[in-house]
Image (cartoon, one colour):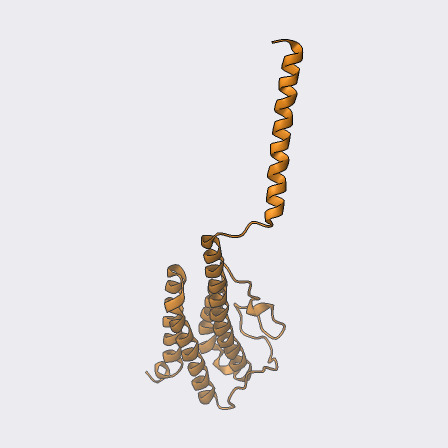
Length: 186
C-alpha cells in the first residue's frame, strides 16, 4: 500500500468514526432526556416515603418537647423531675431526624431552649399548660402517650432499622407517661 492509500484509508476511518459519533449525539438529543428505570422510580418513591415518615416522627417528638418546655416554664418547681425526661425526648427527636430528613432542631427555634437544658426564663408558649402542677403533669403524660402511639403506628411502614428506633422511642414514651402519672404515686 502506498502512502496515498494509507492516507485515504485513515481519512475514511476518521470520517466514519466522526459520522458515527455525530449520529450517536443526534440520536440521543432527539430521544430527549433519559427516563428513569422502574427500579430508580421505586427507589425515589421509597426515599420520599421514608422522608415523610421521618418528618411525621420528628414532628410528634418535637410537639412533645414543646410540651415539656411549656410545662417547665409554667412550673419551674418540677424541673428536677422533668429535665431528665425532657433530655431523653430531645435525644429521641434528634435521633429520629437523622439520615434523611431536614428538620430544624427544636433548639434552633427562638422560643425553645437548647435541647440539653431546661428553659432559663419563662417564654410565652403557644402550648397551654394547666395552672395546677398535678394537672400539668397529667397533660404532659397524655402528650407522651400520644407521641408514643404515633411512633408505634408508624412502625408498620418504616424500614427495618428505623422501625427498631421507633419501637424504642415509643417504649420510652410509654415509660415517660407512666413515670409522670403512676410512677409518682409509688
